[in-house]
Image (cartoon, rainbow, N blue to C red; front, side, top):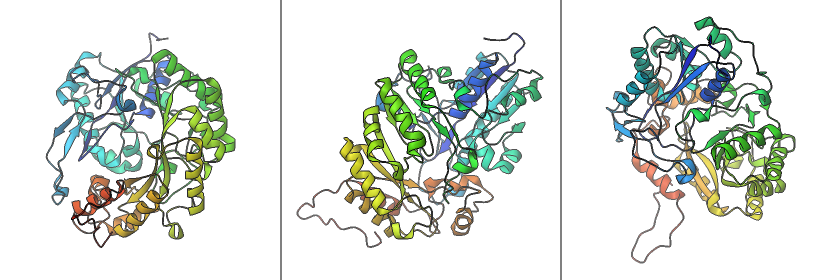
Length: 462
């Protein structure tokens, strides 16, 4: 219930500036979780999404198409000078800036603005959004959080234009932040250490709800050399199965949502203690919904029982966190062996999953990585009878691999977060090479029979 004395808080999800971007179930879960908490405590909240695919000025589109995925509007932009050697087109992804200004003009002046940030190298879109908000509401305090603000704090403080940064999860601090900048206070109605007490994220603030991201737990027990999950969320917190099912039921029955996207970093890291009880509760609920796992599943946790329960619960798209099939030289992590990978694939197929539903992520573009090593991993995944999915490496400050990435890059990664963009293969010394990239992509495709008179050879380096 709104409180008359409570402030009006505006939440903003900024644009993406990049060579390519596509909405693969990408939603600002953290930002909308903060909005839900403040709304729970009586604040008036507004939300503007610069990535809104369903903005009224956009051509009509079906939110249920592609299970909730779809293309963003793209506007060409000048390519950053750092990427003069990259023969790709650069652009802004999201709504027209004029529409954003119009949307800002339609809302009452807020007492506080909170802006999120995603990939570190997407910060130009963040800066553009911050500048637009500041132009509309010059006297309103603006706070910046999210991935860029957490991992590139000094850069964000010096260049973003925000009045204050907040790093990492902000749920435990959000009421204090509001108090600091508006003077308003409220007694907490939830326990930051107990996820079951959190309100459901405010996805209803969106114009349409094509899908709902779902967190059954926060944090990751691993500290892989290439990943920042343990830096962004250092604590490991879990929800009860009953809480998870209650959220599924809410979005499905009240809002008609069919597609749920598992955002957990390690859903099956402890299958007996967490993953299996959640899956059993979902199956018992009888909800006819679909699940997708773009954040990858822990391969060791795919027991025969877990595979059967995922199939019965309605999992449709599975991604496995393989990273490399060079099992004898896994310096990046120790999460899986060759036998465990093969066993997991067999279990998923035995449970009823089809080949096209199962993919394994493979890292490409690592410091010092040869194309031949990636090609061998691609071939190994294809021999297992599932789909290889290339995941291009983006160097992340604070991770174990960061120093090697800085040393191997043709760019000054430490000085310019823009240059960590995985689209430019930043850890290759050579200039950007479409041939290197396209040949790896081609190798992931199903093998076609050689036609008479056609040379079907692969380049020597693959």
